[in-house]
Amino acid sequence: MGADIIDGKAFAAKLRGRIAEAVADLKRGKGLVPGLAVVLVGEDPASQVYVRNKGRQTLEAGMASEEHRLPATTGQAELLALIARLNADPAVHGILVQLPLPAQIDTAAVIGAVSPEKDVDGFHVINVGRLATGQKALVPCTPLGCLMLLRDRLGDLSGANALVLGRSNIVGKPMAQLLLGESCTVTIAHSRTRDLAATCARADILVAAVGRPEMVKGDWIRPGATVIDVGINRVEGPDGKARLVGDVDFASAAEVAGAITPVPGGVGPMTIACLLANTLTAACRANGLEAPAGLAV
Ligand code: NDP
Image (cartoon, rainbow, N blue to C red):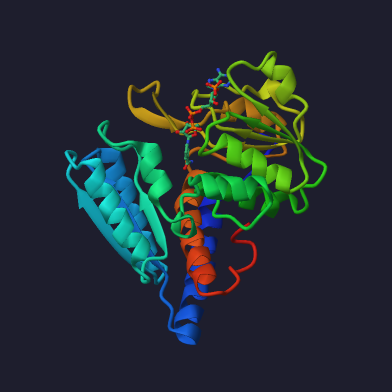
């Protein structure tokens, strides 16, 4: 194996430590405690685990955490009323509505109801527009985490050929905008892209977010490229047990790439760390302060 392994778990732990220090400074200096409210509708088991982890890590960073658990039968009006209360609460700086929402609820309307200044998921169209026009924005957590890993590995990204594989609103599109903001030459590939292998082979930076287990093969990758694997796919291993793999075939890619994130332990741990970063950013900006350097765009 030739590639360096990008240790997202260690990076995320350091980032959480930095955030906790900044939170302690805010408390001491300004009497300000950043607060995150997480809203969970229904009993989806994976969502329950995510919400628990988010709450725990928020408290560990010294922030205030509140959870609002609503039954799966909750109606749209009730959820919007809760969001309105949280929007108006000065102790809440970040609001996260855990997705997916039950079918009776209009997800776009809920995302649109969260105050853009508290939208720590970065999904509100105002934040999408701010990111696209180079203004200060709250940015979706997963691509923000990928950008931090890339900056840490490569320093200045300007002029690099970057390929983003996937064009979802939560990963692919914001990732492409962030890389454009770093002055990369950005290509976005998707299910209709012709000759994906040749397109990948031109990339100095390859971010894979397709949700297809081990789709990107080593011989698609430019020698020395930096590969960020966002995919989280549960597959059955040879022993019949479930295991997690990324969208990149790690074994063959690691022979060719310069650096690569593993799955698990790469991008995954960065997502919640960046949620904490966004909550800190939102709290700072709500109080007329700059967000700590490197945590926000
Ligand atoms: P989506 O399903 O929303 O988007 C997948 C994208 O991949 C689409 O743009 C789709 O193209 C493209 N695609 C699918 N199949 C192919 C193919 N065969 N060739 C080329 N492009 C293809 O997924 P997400 O963006 O939400 O997530 C992507 C992956 O990242 C998933 O594995 C998910 O679990 C993981 N993830 C990980 C997170 C983390 O914290 N680490 C957070 C969020 C997601 P088209 O638009 O044409 O259909």
